[in-house]
Image: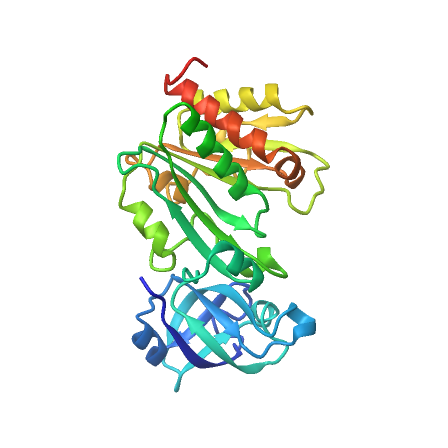
Length: 312
């Protein structure tokens, strides 16, 4: 599906607005919402085409926002809080471009990187594939996660097992703040290639993520979560523990950490046929930077062993 854009007037929200004290929400006037067929709860991209180059490194800045409300305000307007505005403008009022989805899928990954943009990719290995591997916080958002997903795919292929690969990658300054959409919040209207994935009903899905981004690996943990069977989660943790040179704390019990992907609303769970077969991997930035290949390959081997595929 081709995305649609519209020129709008952007301004700061007042204290009564649901977008006032949030970094990632906006409100959209009814006329704009009707024209672009935007609904509450979906994510959109809002761009400032005249942003300061000193501020963003290019002459244009853009970020993803959740539509918190559709308002009766006059004209073609969006409003956002000052915390959210920091990603795209220093001005309290400015001309903006609103995109009715987050990615610009007309861009290749290298083009998105050069333009500080966001794009999705979907590789269908085989239309009978029952395994999906995902890195929807790829690019600069959670660095090297898309690369781990690719290594997972390659290792499965060595054993004759087909996997589909979905990635979403965002680039540029303040990339995490500008592009990160939570795993339990992603709206299908906002991510067209994810919408394709959602219709396929996989037996197993695996997603790669980073956590403890700000803690500099002072207390390194590897979280092996999702609603997949505990036996699979434990196999993955054991395989990584054997393969990685340093010793980390491995957490597989869903109740032991807040970022275990336990929610049924988490993408990795709801893309599976039964809603209970998602495997969410959370490693630290250092692990991902140094061991992205090992992480992807060893998790693939653990999954294949669990499925009884190959001499593992």
